[in-house]
Amino acid sequence: MRVLVTGGAGFLGTHLCTRLLDMGHEVICIDNFFTGSKRNIVPLLDNPLFEFIRHDVTFPLYIEVDEIYNLACPASPIHYQHDPVQTTKTSVHGAINMLGLAKRTGAKIMQASTSEVYGDPAVHPQTEDYWGNVNPIGFRSCYDEGKRCAETLFFDYRRQHDMPIKVARIFNTYGPYMHANDGRVVSNFIVQALKGVPITIYGEGQQTRSFCYVDDLIEGFVRLMDTPHEVTGPINLGNPGEFTIRQLAETVIEMTDSKSELVFEPLPEDDPMQRQPDITRAKQQLGWEPTVPLAQGLERTIAYFRGVLEG
Ligand code: NAD
Ligand code: UDP
Image: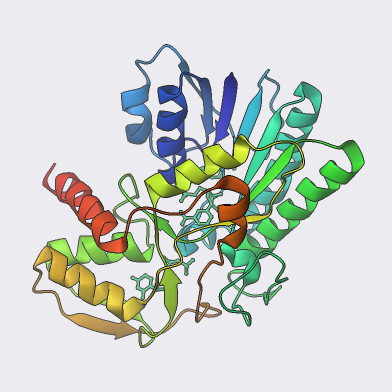
C-alpha cells in the first residue's frame, strides 16, 4: 500500500510514518516544516520505502496513493495563533486539496480532527454527538473552526461522492518527538522541571485535560483506517483519565525529582475548563482503548526530553 502522511514531520506524523513503515507500507511524507522538523524524520530517510516531499497542503498535490492520513496543521495554541489566517487555510484548503486527491485516486482518507471541535464543552465527558460550544471569533477560533469546517468538508465529500472517509477526534496526546519549545502543557512542564526553572501554570490549574500516550493514539489511527466503508467516525481517540493541570505539574515535579516552583500566569482566553473523551464508540467500532497510564507515558517522555536536553 502507498500511504500519504501530511504533516508527517511533526510529532504525531513522525510516529505514524514509523508505524506504517514497520507495517511494510510505502510512505510518502509531506510537510512544510512550519512546526515539524527534519530531525524527526532523519532516521526514516535511509528506508527505501520512505519518501519525503516538501509541500504545503494549501496547494494542490498530484501523486498516486492508496491511503491518506491528513495531519498537516500546527496543533499547539502558540503556533496556531502565530499566523491564524494560515492556520484556517491549512485546515480548510488542506482538506479540500487532500479530499480532491482522494477523490481522483480513490484513496481512503483520514482526518486528524480534534477535541477542540467541542470548544469549552458543556457536556462532560464529550460524546461524538455533542455539537460543541465554540467561540467563532476568538483567538482559538482559527484552529477550532478550521477543524470544524474540515469535518464538514469530509462529510460533504462523503454524501456527494460516497468516498471512504474517516474522522478521528484526537484528545491531548503526548510523548517523545514533541518539540521541547512546542508550548503544549506536557512538554512545557517536563522541560521546565528538568531545567529546574518555574513551572508555568495558566490560571489556577483547576482546568482539566485527559492525556493520551502517543503509541495508543497511533494504534487508534491504524485501526480506524482499517475499518469498512460504513465506518466514518467522527470517533473520539483519547485517554479518559482526567487530571487537573495542577495535578499534572505536581506529578511531573515528583517524577523528575525537580526543585522547580509553581508559578501562576493568566489563563489564556477561551481556554477550555474541562476535557474528557467518552470512548464508547472507539471501543465498539475499533475494539480500541488506551493501554498506557499517565505515569508510564510520562516516564518515557521524561526519558526522551532528558536525552534532548543533554544532547
Ligand atoms: P505538530 O505541530 O507537531 O505537527 C503538525 C505538522 O504539520 C508539522 O510537521 C507542520 O510542519 C505541518 N504543517 C503545518 N502546516 C502545514 C501546511 N500548510 N502544509 C504542510 N504541512 C504543514 O502537531 P501534532 O501534535 O503532530 O498534530 C498533528 C495533527 O493532529 C494536527 O492536525 C493536529 O491538529 C491534530 N491533533 C493533535 C493533537 C495532539 O494532542 N497532539 C490533538 C488534537 C488534534
Ligand atoms: N497550560 C499551562 N501551562 C503551560 C502550558 C499550558 O497551564 O505552560 C495549560 C493551558 O492553559 C491549558 C492546558 O494546560 O489549560 C493544556 O494546554 P495545551 O496548550 O497543552 O493544549 P490545549 O488542550 O489547551 O489545546
